[in-house]
Length: 110
Image 1: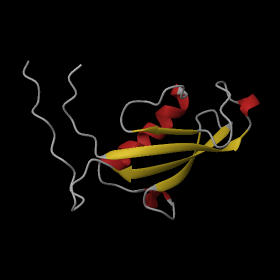
Image 2 (image 1 turned 90 degrees about the horizontal axis):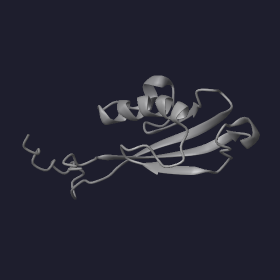
Image 3 (image 1 turned 180 degrees about the horizontal axis):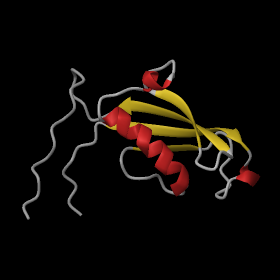
């Protein structure tokens, strides 16, 4: 694997509501997952489809206030099965001292 894109956003998804007996993976309140682009280990693929959509909003320059959230980079999201809820937080990573994202590495040759 030859990773050449420098990720400029990190994410944290924390379980804030629901009971583990209702979740297929047994996620419980205060379980936290940190990730950038790759899905976190032991994370529900159904919930990830919902969360990943909102991560892309941030990666493309948007924010969560357009969805009605009070904070630009934090919001609550129900899982796809509506059995638990997550608090999603986005934070900038891999940036220089001025907050500018670091450049990508050279793209691999085919």
